[in-house]
Length: 306
Image (cartoon, rainbow, N blue to C red; front, side, top):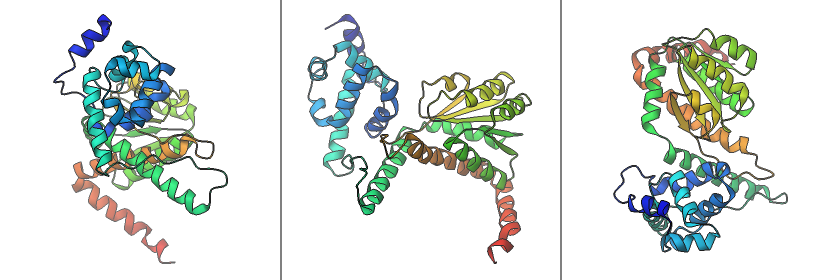
């Protein structure tokens, strides 16, 4: 066993910062695309067969995946475990959950000739899994800090393009209805122009599944440099957008396929995070939010009677 493996393996026991078993599958799906191919093999193997892998030593798993002991340990650390010992404990917990029926079996991809009933069932499963993974992996400390910043914000700017732009619009209309000043920006030039006007006491939120969308990163950087509190909602916690984020909210995503692009499942997980932010802010600002929400309902009521 290499010295690197010995050091990490030996310090693993008793850590309180490990990823809980329920979040392991979500972590694998979220982080695998940013891993090296050898680390992906390890991650995908443990997620596919937690019970079998829980019985393996670090050497056994390295041999099974055609990698090295050091690669296995590095993969464990990327997934949130100090060492392989903690990963094995989590695998045993995940295996127990699956055997008890609390964790569903993996679904298959949607095929071009699938009956529409199967499409509905598979999409529903994937959506449920994406939401469960996002909830399991969401850092509630970071979420609470973002809610606090939003609740006291003078102004909120939200950046997103494509499918993430739709989520940005959803968040801003929710915040507007409870009395906050919020703007969604999908035009990169306008986003930067507005970001220049932000300052301490303002909040800027970037929504990007890849974590590398330049049109979203640039205005967040400008807002960050001008003193605004910045939040990144992303599926890549190691993405470039996070270097300009005071708070990072990680989303999960279902496996991408030909008929199910990543934008579909990333939108689902982003909407969950947006809803959590909205409810959190509404709770913190209830005395202001409740009458503002009632006023918006009343202002639109006549349109629903037609």
